[in-house]
Image (cartoon, rainbow, N blue to C red):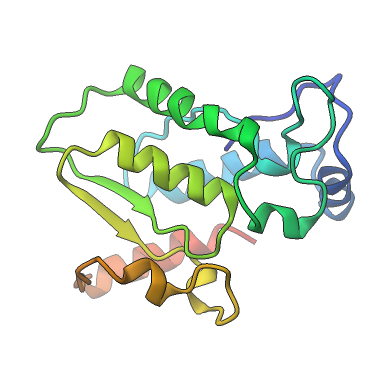
Length: 179
């Protein structure tokens, strides 16, 4: 969800409020620039699908925001957004050719954020047998969520991952890139 809204696009109220609080003309482009800095330490190539974030998405017929208020992005995926699952899946498959041996990482979508839920559903479409879910931050640390971590994990086997200290430091430095 990294697309910058078109210049002639009238921002929905939620997006407009977000832009007013932000010190950059294009918060999405700024976020992508931070991604580049953060991922450079891992020597990772970033490929963007360029779908609009939930706060920018509007109904194709009515031009009304799909998610009018901040709480709306934590309710349920709007019916118009289900098409994004196949669109994003197809776009990713145009970048890479996945095999049954590839590992797909996906957020658990435990916070109920619609973009995280769509991403999880895309991950499930892409994965053959090897799918790992990760706990979404900051939602994993919040106790009053629509989808509690226990509910999301009920049929999953937990996997503890050991990260060497120098890699933890690298991850901390990457996280610190984001204000």
